[in-house]
Every structure is written in C-alpha cells, then in structure tokens.
Length: 302
Ligand code: GH3
Ligand code: MG
Ligand code: MG
Ligand code: MG
Image (cartoon, rainbow, N blue to C red; front, side):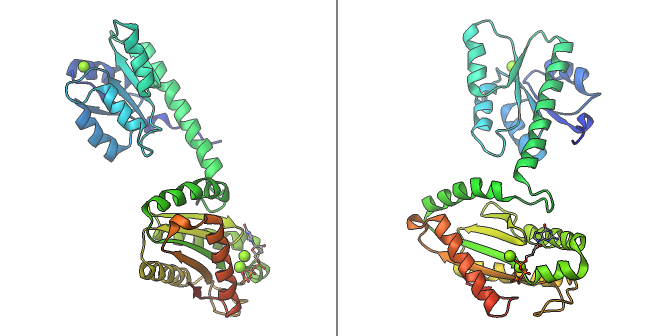
C-alpha cells in the first residue's frame, strides 16, 4: 500500500476576506502547501494551473459565489473529484442544505475552531488519497501503468458514444507485438515484461490527448480509439507509432521480420460513427491486424 505524503498536499483557500485566509493559513501552512485566492475567478485560474488536492471555500463572495464555484467544479469531470469544504457563517438551516446540494463534502463554521479545521482537512485528504490509490489500482495495468482492459471496457463505450454525437471520423486501432512469444523464449519473461513497459510507454506518450483512448487490451496487444481525426491523420499517427516502437531498437534476434522489436497494427476508420457499434469496429480492427500479421508483420493494415 502506498504511503500518503500529506506534506505534498496542495490546499486552496478561497475567501474574499484577507483575515479569514490569514487565519486558515496559520492553522494549515506547517502541514500543507497553501494556495490563496480572494475571488471565485482567481480560484478558477489557480485550480486550472495547480490542481489542488482540496479546496476550502467561502460561501459568500461577490460575483462568483462559493456555491456557484462549487457547482461548476462538480459538473466538470476534470475537477469533480477535488473535495470542497465550505467555510460558513450560517444562520439559516437552508444554507447548510445548499452547501450539501452544491456538492460540498463538509463544512467548517465561522468563527473557525482551529482543531476542527485541521482535523476535517486531514480526514478529507486521507479519503481523497485513498480513493486516488484505489482508482489507480482499478483502472491502470499493474505492469505497464497504462489504462487496463477494465477501464477500456467502461470508458471506451462512453468515449465512443460521445464521438457518435459529433458524427465525424472515429478509428479503432489494435497493436500487437510481433513474435513476442519468441522474444520471451529467447530473453526470458522478465526482459519480456520490460519490453512491454517500454513499448506501452512509447505509444502512450504519442496518444496523450482528449481525442484518444489507449489501453492494454490483452497480453501484448494494445487498443487505441481515436475520435475526430481524418483518415490521413490516423494513417500518419499509426505509422509514426510503429516507427517510434522500432526506433526503440529493442534487440529481437528471434524475430523473423526485423532485428528489433516491432508491432503490427490493424485499424478501421469509420466516417459515420452514428450508425456503428464499437464492438463491431473492434472486431474489424482485429481482422485487419491478422491481415497485417499474415502479410509478414511489422506493418499497418487500414
Ligand atoms: P505474433 O507475431 O503472431 O503476434 O506472434 P506472438 O508470438 O507475438 O503471439 P502469441 O500470441 O503466440 O504470443 C504472445 C506472447 O505474449 C505469449 C505470452 O507469453 C506473451 N505475454 C503475454 N502477456 C505477457 C506479459 O505480461 N509479460 C510477458 N513477458 N509476456 C507476455
Ligand atoms: Mg465572504
Ligand atoms: Mg497477440
Ligand atoms: Mg504478438
């Protein structure tokens, strides 16, 4: 189990009154990195650049209020997992309800009890870090660190259905390492593991944006979904991926197609995803992969 390093935690404190920020800073600054914002707009900028681990948020601020900011963040998949603790001065029970409904995870009453503040922050950071560890274990492949099959099965469907709404080019690409059984037989399983790590890291770096989803599909097979790209762009991306893997120059003396480790790729391009089914496209990409293998490996079929 990973250890949680709380000293590394980033806490964003948002309040329009400097005296409140000052007090919170005094309580927390010896344990965490503190970022401070005096308005909702300033907070948004900091959230984008610093990605805090937790937010302490004043409810009442002019212009963008804490409640509105909280609702915005909870509605955004990139930021919705950041726990938000409201700093409140309620007089009415309805105000408490509003904080829960906006998506706050907890609140601390003004005047602030310092021990309560530090305990609440620590409790929610612990939960956040534990949840992050679990998410990593559940979604990432243990060997390569890229998304695993479970994540792909869950998110691939969502990724595809979003693409169906835009109704533009969608591609499925299946990669498979050539003669990998022979690689293991020659160099041993541990070197094989290392090769898998290098290849997946190499590809992952080239496909790291919102229009792509890349995962380890099976043993030495990887799947890539690409949305909103032209046939030409897909073709050139796949070719650059295959070239990048070959350029790793991992020796493979038992390969019958190269002196180095190579991959074959099978791909389908669909210009009308609205009427397609993801599973059919995956199956077609697999058929294409077998054609690439049959044709001698170290090549792309699209
Ligand atoms: P082809 O060019 O037709 O793809 O041949 P291949 O040998 O790559 O394909 P095959 O399906 O016969 O063998 C895949 C090999 O991948 C067999 C299996 O032991 C190996 N493999 C699968 N997962 C892992 C892993 O996590 N680590 C290691 N070292 N090897 C793995
Ligand atoms: Mg205020
Ligand atoms: Mg295979
Ligand atoms: Mg293979």
